Structures are given as C-alpha cells and as structure tokens.
Length: 345
Image 1 (cartoon, rainbow, N blue to C red):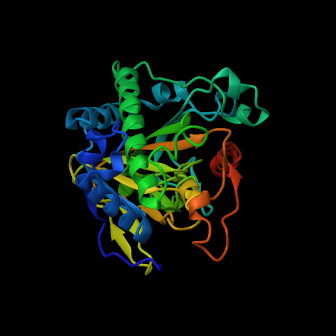
Image 2 (image 1 turned 90 degrees about the vertical axis):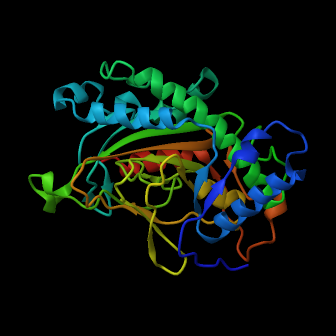
Image 3 (image 1 turned 45 degrees about the horizontal axis):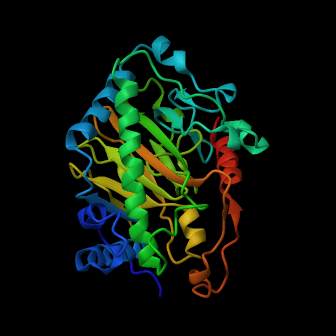
C-alpha cells in the first residue's frame, strides 16, 4: 500500500498502551487496538507523531530543558571541560559548528550521552570507537541525576511504544525485545540552537540541523556532528523541545515541509532506519531538519532508543513479501560507528 501524504503530524494518546504494558493479552483490548491502528497509520504515512498520555511528568520534561539551558549559558571554558573527542568515545560536549550536514557547519552545540557498554560488548573491536564513560558537567549540580532519571523513564516508554509498533506490523508484542532490542543501546543528545542573528559570522553556518533521517541517520533534531543523528534514530526517537519556538520540520511523502510545532506535554516521536529494515520497507523514516529563526536560544533533547549494539538487523519473517526489493541487513553497531565517524567534523 502506497503511503498517503499527510498534511499534519498526528497526535496519539499512548496511555492505554503504557497502562496495559505488561498484560499478556495486550493486543486484545479495544483501547489498545485503537492505539495500534493509529501507530500503523502514522508509521506508514509520515513516520512521525506526537505522543500524549505517556506518563512522563511535565515537571521532569521541563526540568530537563531548564537544566540544559543552564548548561549552555555557562562560559565556554566550563563547557569544554567535558569536550567530546575520539578518545572519549565521542561522548561529551560539542561546540557550535562541529556537526556537519552536506558540507555546512550545523548551527547548534550539544552534549552527547550513550549507553555505557558492558564487558560483553567492550570485548568487540567494533565497540572501541564509542567506548568510554559518559562525561557529566559539575554544573548545573542536579544535571546528572535528572538526566539519568529521564533516560530510565524514556527507556520504559520507548519499549511500550515498540510493543504497539510490533503488533501493528503483525508480530508478537515482544518482537523488538530479546536479541533484537531487549538490551538496547541508547543515545541522549542535549542540543542548543542559538538565534542565527547572534552569530558573529552567520554565513559560515548552515541551518540548525540539516536534512537527515534517524540513525539511521540518526536524527531528528539532530544532525550534529555525528548524529543528527543519523537521521539518527536507528529505531525510535523521542524529542522534548522548547515550547513556543517552532523549529523542527518534517518532509511528507509529497515533498512538503510540515512544521512539528511544540505541543506542551508531548514528545515528538519518529521512526528510524533500523525499523525500516525490520519492517522490510513497510515503515519509512522521514527526512527532517531544524530551522531556528526565533530570537531566542532553543533547546531540544532527543532520546534515541536503539537495537542491541551487536544485533543483526534484517527483515522480520512476517514482513517478507511486502516489498519488491528486500531490505539489506546491517549490524547495528557497524551502522552506528560509521555514522559517528562520518558526521563528526
């Protein structure tokens, strides 16, 4: 079935899916079936949706953005204490312009956090590129505690949404668990977009974040040096963006750019390249970009929920036959490392 070009990004109340998460008969409840149908419609036709009813408190979402603003207001010398380098496993602070899209320096600064790899993964030669401890700033004082709590809650929410996606594709609720994404890699990007007219030489920068998909190219509001995330999102991305500053744009299947305006209390959710492969092209990631034309500094905090680092991603058996050309398999860690080395300027 060819995708239908949507003229707006749908809002999905995922509360029934979150509330009934552990029920063995998850897909049989009428309210959950309704959510599953909405997820299928959004993933087939635009690859984006707003998630409401997700259970993460508005206070925590606001706190994450507020602390991010506090960090970006610090003097450069303080921010550079956690500078991202190859030796840090590409974890840490990235100053303005170090992320590149299509040969232009993206107009944002960021801090990148990855899941810290266990000994079973550290032994892989592939993992050495992104291996190392996350770097946390001394200030703001509550920064690390709040961000770690936030990551824990978004991991649970992502898992619940993916159970709905699995059922939408015709599989079992736990399709994306176990050896596929039961031990998921994750990425948290804390991104700051300055007003372009505040720059000394704005002509040397591109837009806030150039077109990309997610980790697939990782990501949405992310096109940072290394991931902006690859269109970044290998599997699923949840974005917490400042209210009242429209900046994120999504291209629908007819080529029209749609504004993903902030909707307080919701996450902007998008699917990535790994889900494209697992669904054998049934679900397609969507190009998106960031244009901060406002007079205010903008913060966006995307969370990327990824497959297991060492898993081989290939079309699911029940998705075979839904495309004329079968998607080529990839090892997620190889895909990630390639994007990291390509995007970091």
